[in-house]
Length: 339
Image (cartoon, rainbow, N blue to C red; front, side, top):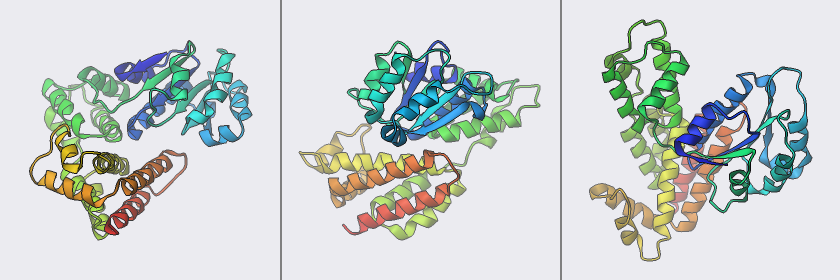
């Protein structure tokens, strides 16, 4: 079964118990990760003892591990969940065999992947299945009704005034999914004991400080090869409320653009002219200079490094997230400095 857009987001919040598996995929790691947390929490009712985690690479080496995990019976009441992290096409046949005779007594499979092309064998398997859902997840901001539902679920009973709702709706366009989740939790916590709806002043006071300009300066420094500026600029982004995931998203967006520009058959300037939204003035000049400094091969290598760091951040266990992102950006800046 194929789901997309808001249907996918709604499914992750309230999965269909009649199904047996779900594939979560999309280009934005933070969006997919947030949806994974929601669906696992909904299926397991927040009980970690009912969740089994497997890596996609481990399943490829030992296909029987997935079947054993799905068929196992737990000691605790309620349906179990098998979470497959970093799922790839190479495990599609293994998943196909398991889904062929899965039952309602078996664990619910949640497979988490990155961006998948329409021809992806993993995506085709879930889209064509009667017992599974393929959830395409994209970083579209939630609408007012979804925001209200999220706030209510987080514990805000009194809600927001009309002006506060407008302020929050305007802010979501500037936040990544992780930041938005944190903001919803802060608003709900702040207003948990209030009997009247929170006003716009209260909501605006809880929003993270603006980091867009600092983030732009950081990414520009990395693309320009100014490695010595990475640490102080990253500190300023963090002080303004910017998360390591937000930095990776912004850097990934920049280097995907550089790959496109550097590999354009009709030249960089023609490729920049096709960008939407269009780029003008000093920003266009800087982008043209950066694209000329990066060959498509080196830009692709930088993008791979960003993706590998992102996968590491999403893996289980405690990590120094900011330090990992810092090292990643310094390495990329040094690649750019070498010309």
